[in-house]
Image (cartoon, rainbow, N blue to C red; front, side):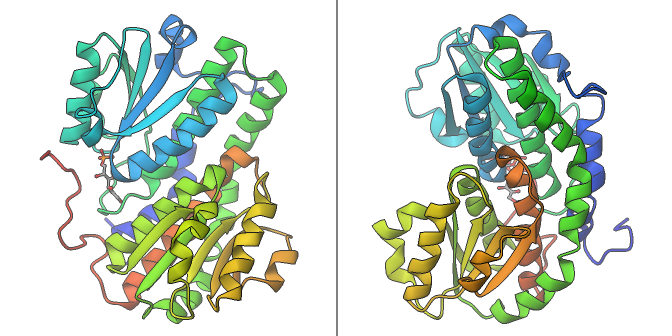
Length: 366
Ligand code: F6R
């Protein structure tokens, strides 16, 4: 059942080239010019005339939503808000029939997300689901949606579902952007082509396995971790920290890198490693100054960088290199080393990674 792997989580991390192939299948035309998300196309008017989009989700799915916000705003020129499903209901949400609400849930059973959907529908919003488990309660209670089709996720810590959610959100952004005329054809083609190449890129990142296994030994006894990222990778910093927390029980905080100087920098010392997600993107220069600030305070830095960027190797203590992809796709390639780092640190501590204490795969209580 575990396909020769020691744990479901490791199997699920390693099957991401295949799960992303399944997730994309039939959704990008051969010439990469059109995105075929039938649930979106069939409801074209709702998406084209949407006033704004509100995404509701919990946990890892909420992190995917934060990435979705950026890519939808970039491609569709529409305002996107992201809410914790559990907070949405109690925030007197201002929702009208001109809003599109997107609910993201791997299990399709999360009680808070289900309740948020019911509230949004009662206010007349069009509700779109992005789920994995076919026929679950959430896909049954939405107006339309897309399955991520990554197969059953058994490990409690979400891995392949996260990359599937980010992939579907990117496809949705491109599809809606095309309908609204807000994205250039060349951009759609380039990103669609790179999404098709993604399984190859993920295979390449998985080859970091040995390097990460060795690296993990240095950090097994750290008591706190800081994860920093900006732009598209602020949410992946949050996700990297969540993965580490839930399976290793080490305290970790994810922060948008520039916020560090507004408080968390006080924590930095030689005892607290910082993981910096620093692909060569539009915010690269800014994040490098954050790396310098950590180093100047005696901190150690593990940096996830774009292959071939040698300059940063002189500043960071350890670098994990990922392939060069368009900025909006960097969350996909950086997530895999973050998953592996959390995984091996947890294994070194002899944790039950598939069933971490106190956690359940679907949270059906509010
Ligand atoms: C983290 C994790 C949880 C879930 C959250 C939402 O690894 O698995 O944070 O992401 O409970 O679950 P779904 O996506 O099933 O609604």
